Image (tube, rainbow, N blue to C red; front, side):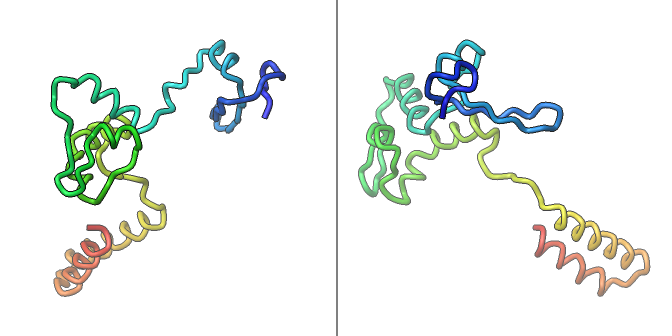
Length: 150
């Protein structure tokens, strides 16, 4: 793709802007992106972030997986974990990075609209059952809400 601004260089920065509710995609070369004040800081890799952390903590010994022997330096170089136990061995670094980049350490995505409507209907039915003192129905509805929505 060609840069939309200079119309000559190869586009390497791909932006999506939402202005006034409309989505617009812009393809720019690196030079034009810098001129427009767009930095590549938003693009990163997990291993680069780990390497930066590792460099800043140079006095600490490298973490190592007790099962497969992979150490943090090798993990940072390849970006690959050696076994399922590596998640535990490198948990402090991974958790910190996820929190910094995702603002949470676990996924808290959106709830589908139909699920919200279903939950509201069940909660209303539960409230009605309690008000009518139909406690058997209320208990079933409470259990259904708990099973479906935690």
